[in-house]
Amino acid sequence: FSGVLAQDVLRALLELQDRLAAATAWAPGAGRNITLQDVCYAPLNPTEPGVADCAVSSVTQYFQNNRSHLALTAWQDDSKDQGTVDWHDHLIYCVNSPLSFKDITALELSCMAEYGGP
Image (cartoon, rainbow, N blue to C red; front, side, top):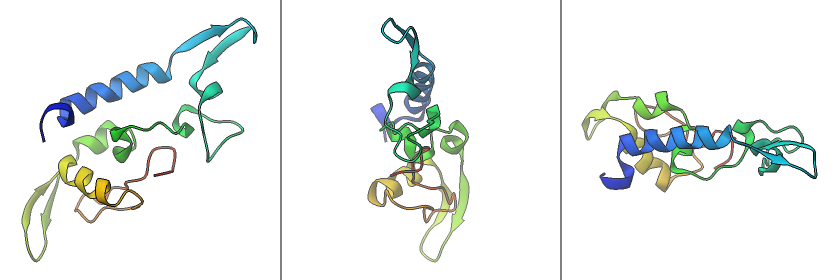
């Protein structure tokens, strides 16, 4: 991978998402600050959503918006190939199987988003 799918770009995207998730705006009609939780679509927790419940569409959701998941590596030795697997392998798997709860790499990460959906 190169360009927009470089690991440093994905880490920067996670930082930007964190800043946006923490943003507030004054709503004069409501007489209070409004946050992402007030306006987001949270299909699995619509009544009292937290930031993690918001359905944010981003490539980083394949890693549950978790920097540690993005940085993982593991040794894989199957009958065909052996070597180190990392975020590249997980991403390729998830693009092809977005509903998977565990990829087939040695990382064994879920492809489901932080909010619990695909």
